[in-house]
Amino acid sequence: MEPVIGLEIHVQLLTRTKLFCACRADYFAAPPNSLTCPVCLGLPGALPVLNKKAVELALRVALALGAQVQRVSQFDRKNYFYPDLPKGYQITQRDAPLAWGGSLTFKVDGELRTVRIRELHIEEDAGKLIHTETGTLIDFNRCGVPLVEIVTEPDLRSPREAREFLRALRTLLRHLRVSNADMEKGELRCDANVSLALEGKLGTKTEIKNLNSFRAVERALTAALDYQKERLIRGEAVHQVTFGWDESRNELMIQRTKEEAHDYRYFPDPDLVPLVVSPEWLEQVRAEMPELPWERAARWQREYGVPEREAEALLSDPARADYFEEVAKAVPNPKAAVGWVLSELWPYWTDEEPPIPAQELILLIQKVEEGVLPRPKAKEFLELAAKGEGRIPDLIQSAEATVVRDEEALWTIAKEVVESNPQAVADFRAGKNQALGFLVGQAMKRSQGRADPKRLAQILLELLKG
Ligand code: ADP
Ligand code: ZN
Ligand code: MG
Image (cartoon, rainbow, N blue to C red; front, side, top):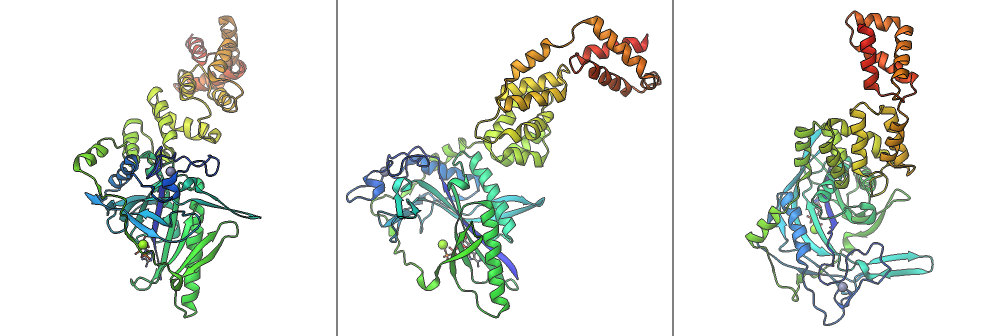
């Protein structure tokens, strides 16, 4: 028995206004029911007008996935009753979606996998129900927010693979600047379909609706597979069921069975003309496409020598990728920038904003590379600055102010080190150049990190040769 998984993914598009009206689309922190109008509330007589920007963002996704954009697509009404849907129908595209086909290639445990895309269409979001102890409240702000829905073929073979696919898709969406694709905020949501194939023959699928985290996708799919296996082992058939996922209890919840399936009575929305995407428009969208994440990873490897794994981590968020790129461009050894950003700075990067400006990290790395700031000191400064306990330029300046500039003091330190390390001195004279590094280290220790290591090396060299 082999697991077979297909996903239907909803992505909120980053437009200023909603899909069919001029209401602002950034509902997340807005007071409930403050972003509505007759169009998105579905009041009689109100007419929808399609948001061009939303179409362009959806086209970007289609192009990045290599999908075939249709010259003419169309909007349909999907009719159903639910309190979060004041119009009584959702405007979507069913019979003639924006684009067909395409694929996304990603990595699981070092192996490349490709998932085919079935189709991609534009639709509007519904409102939000807020369940409280005294009753259910409703917020219509999300009504009419633009979504692109991406439907995959059933090409995924394990819950883990489904999770990694979604991760790769999120990276892509973020780089395309079409969505923040934050699952916690519901900007990226996923319905997962799963079945067990027997000797290559597809089984009946169960669907899990509205998964809101990568962990939920993996766990819910695992639970659904267990449920199906148990039934099959007991000799029972798998029925078409729709589940929800209870994140806190780690449990599937039955939402409806096939008998309760809706008849959505789809028909073309008479208020909207067909959507025509001319070749010129499509070319313009193509010309404005940002660099794709896999293109960027390849370029980083070429230009900066960034290893693949590190590139993947840096690329997970374009803001961090841009930050890294700014640093890599400016420092003498770009490959060293990887460690500074990924290992040193990353742990402090918990908000959207970077813990310190790129210019400050650049300054810090430059000082280390020039040999005027010992690495442990630099890490200390980074920690202080990241915690808001100082600014890098000030910290560096105060450190430089206490650097031992007194030549006599430096010579004294160097002489002491030469005297107390006869073995290293002998090694150096026998041709072991790395012994000099050791002696510089010892001298730096004696100066409590306050000397200029370059000057110390010069003095030591003179002493050793003299
Ligand atoms: P429905 O008509 O029930 O919505 P679709 O054929 O439209 O089903 O497919 C919806 C999603 O389910 C797609 O992502 C598809 O890849 C996936 N899917 C279809 N059949 C199966 C199956 N047997 N097992 C797992 N996933 C499937
Ligand atoms: Zn509106
Ligand atoms: Mg379907």
